[in-house]
Length: 174
Image 1 (cartoon, rainbow, N blue to C red):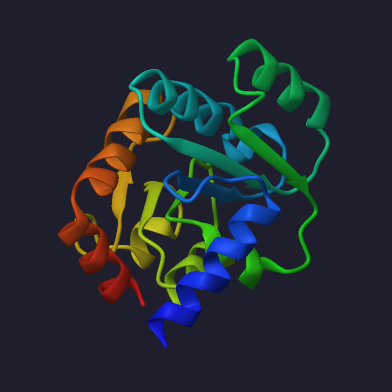
Image 2: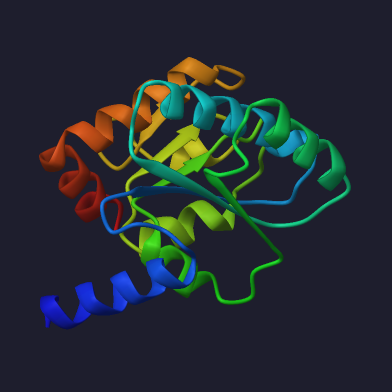
């Protein structure tokens, strides 16, 4: 029942302090340089600066948690970003994400991208390692070059502004 699903979705968003009108951009990753979290945060700042009603959720922990926190503060994202740390209930987290952004600098075959696809989330990811084998750019996800903050932000904004594209990416990825 879509009405029941929307009620559950809104309840979970309220638990995280996210307004019903706010879009959620999420990343699940280890907090270490190779995962490109600084580019996720940079894109979050750009998206926020462009005026989108969005919140950013990051699940994961790692060796660079202090640097991550400092970057969040440097970019003024304290009120917009929800750092969850280690998340054991990934399906619950995926239930509130509107766009999954994966900004890794290097990859093998990232399972989290497959999980996002299975959860029917539109995906913006860097075209590294096996990610480009999983996603077909413009069909089942949007791929950008690594280390390009504005390209990540533009791809996310394209999805947020185009409901038909968002639906198509969800369906074809799944």
